[in-house]
Image 1 (tube, rainbow, N blue to C red):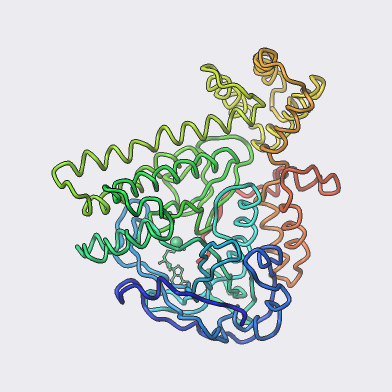
Image 2 (cartoon, helix red, strand yellow; image 1 turned 135 degrees about the vertical axis):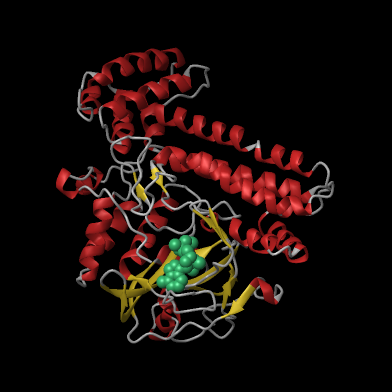
Length: 488
Ligand code: AMP
Ligand code: MG
């Protein structure tokens, strides 16, 4: 049997989910199968590309052990509470346990309406499906926790958005799809018993070490806060902008989820926003840590209802939320040190990085390329020129470079070793927005070559791959993507 499911979420009480069958599509066609990932999950990739398997990945045929459900959740969207969201265009087929012993959700996204669809059609357009495929896999290769993409299937049907677009279904794999909004769903209804059942389920599935702790719900909050703090630090270190950090798009497992209008920053600017709907810049690059805290505060409000000492609950919740800052700072600063090639931690490191960022910001230097070219400069001072050309005023780099070299000299160590360590942390390749758009535009015209090439390049983001040097480069002015859309 292809999928050996063990569906623990479906066994939770009825108010956690709604039974929902995928709606068959006209003409399923496999666009992409993530063969390496399939193997890691314990599948034979050949078995996943048979006509029967493709029908399963399209929602036309149900795997024998599937218990398809749409999960219930609420969420704060751009600061406003929406009590009834839920999987409106995604269906959880079931859970598998990988050969390594990890439990993973297998979900179809774009597989037709569910009881939570409201006015939506339950479908996904090809573009957003391929974007999620490319970017989530790229994030994984950048060592950032994320949901994964197992397959993408064209439906042979059209979906109506602002225009008529080809439809597709993504097979998404996650440690779980439980969100901050899942807790808000029960808390907002005053359903304490369900809320506790959810918390216990989360502990068993994601934080098993806490099961026997005395104040396990406080510890759970703290553990989730810590994971999110480290996740957001990792986003910032590669220039990632999620774009729609609503509480329903924040996981409890600490994985990045729901790639909508996401994008990577090119020219460094902390105020960067891509999402068309984010007119206020709520989810701008540099706002992401404080938005994460805002979201986690909503989670704290839910979990507080379970704290054993009611009188002290607010104080304890605040104490748990307060761990965000040190975890974020540590992960972020450690990351910056690695990006700069520093081994020892010193007080002034943060100022050194801030100085570089200010110079990058004032000179529109490309975030990814600046750090990548810094790797060569760590080995050979003559390579400074290649970094400097990324700055509108090339001389702006010199002031930083002088201080940086002075700092490196204090550490000792040899250049080649430092440069190769830096190359393992400063990627050469990120999914640049214009490349993603190019891959999508070609796929809409039935040419999947750019999509596959891009995925191949992004499999090894830390290797130079000279034959793909063009993929390292930022967009030309005329190719530049300034806005992104959810496309839902
Ligand atoms: P998202 O933009 O993916 O975070 O989705 C926000 C909410 O809208 C979730 O409850 C989705 O399930 C729902 N939703 C988004 N697109 C659709 C669609 N095409 N049909 C039904 N529900 C949708
Ligand atoms: Mg969502």
